[in-house]
Amino acid sequence: NELELADHIELSDFFRKTYGPTGEFNAKPFEGHRSWAGARPEIRAIGYDDRGVAIHIAALRRFIKVGEIDLLVAELGLYGVRPDLEGLGITHSIRVMYPVLRDLGVPFGFGTVRSALQKHITRLLGRQGLATVLPGFRVRSARPDICLTVPPTRVEDVVVLVLPIARPMSEWPAGEMIERNGPEL
Image (tube, rainbow, N blue to C red):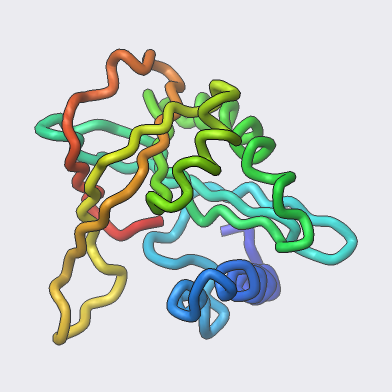
C-alpha cells in the first residue's frame, strides 16, 4: 500500500525490461503499468540507485500443500535485477529477506525457478547455505486470470528453493507435488 502510482509504473517498466529478454510472454503480465505478475505481493524489497530500480524481490504468506501436508510459507518471487547489475543481486536479496521472513513468523521461505536455472541457483544460493535447492518438483498453480480457452490451473516442472526460517529443513514435508493454492507470485 505504500507504493504510489509512479512506483507501480517504474516497477512495471523494470519488470518488462528485465523479463522481456527471457521471452516476450514473460514481460506480458507487466503491461498496463501492473507491477505484479500473478498474486500481489505482501512485502517488497526494492533496491534503487541513481538509475532507478536496481533490484526487486517480493514475498507473500500463503498455505501450500506439499504432498499431503498443508504448510505455511512465505513465497518468494518477482525477483529481478537490472541487466547491467546481473551477478550482484540474488545472494544479497535472500540475505536481506531472512530477517523479514523471521518477522513474518513463517516456518519456511519457498520459491521456484525453471529447471534450466538449477545450476545457477545452486551456485548462488545452495552452496552458500542460503537455501536448499530441490529439483524434480511439480507445482500446480491457479492462473492469475480466467480465460475460457485454457484450464484455470497449470502444472509446471520446477526446481524448489526452501529457506528454513523457524523450522529446520528436516521438517520440510516429503512429496514431489506442490499445490500453490493460488497464482504464482
